[in-house]
Image 1 (cartoon, one colour):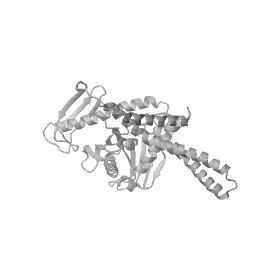
Image 2 (spheres, one colour):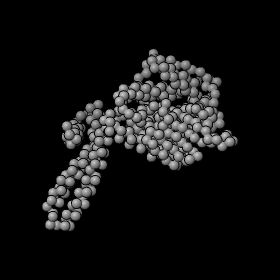
Image 3 (cartoon, one colour):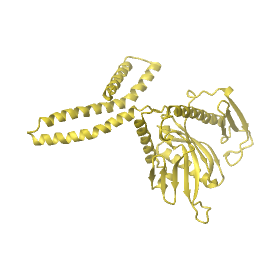
Length: 358
């Protein structure tokens, strides 16, 4: 079936859905058809534009053929034909991108987890900066950023920190941030001026709802204990801290930032649900993408994905070989869109080229 035949089928499908929605259907069928219609609407707009351009090219070619004795008309038609031929590939590309299978988790909110890696206190300070960078990015995007837990070192660094981020297309825009982030700079404590290399790990998980992951009581073990150490923002003398172990997977989540054991349990279950969901997604993706080259989008956290070099004022994303020389604007102000847009575009281009879906 040709590209044009596929486009015609999509237009017909939208018309069928429109008629169905107008027929008085209700309940789950109405919700399903409404969502499908809403998904198809912007694609059909692009198809209509594509078809109009194709027709313009035919009409303009005909005008050129019959305007040899009218130089002014001929020049205008040739200009319009060049413009239409220039625009057509771009519209066709947009349609192909729109038709790529979407990651079912793209529309979900996200759980952000940042952990200090190699580098001691400098790594912990970098982890805190990364966490703040994503908080500022969330503010730019007008997303809600709710801190779930922070385990600090007492002098400004974070051993680990997590947050729930909610808003429009959160996971879709943040999912490629998962990985090892490396920093190169001279620490404040370094008297000899030697550049140190430290690292922090970022994990972005799609926030799973109860309908996505059902956790049975028999599958978890809940231990309570007293919050303690620098990580407890509300250290107290009651057994408010919670550790939940998911027995089938061995995933363990601890939460101690709230004074209430009930609140800590609710937050821990939220994180646990998302980790289980992400583990299932990763397994399915690995099976589907076994032949795919490259690691963009795989969430492989053992791989160094980005380097922040402060002496040179640059940030380099190693997956797309992209370097920006505005490190302060990125780290301090959270202006990440240029990297994120490029990563999304690269993933789309790779999937178009390989024909491998998510």
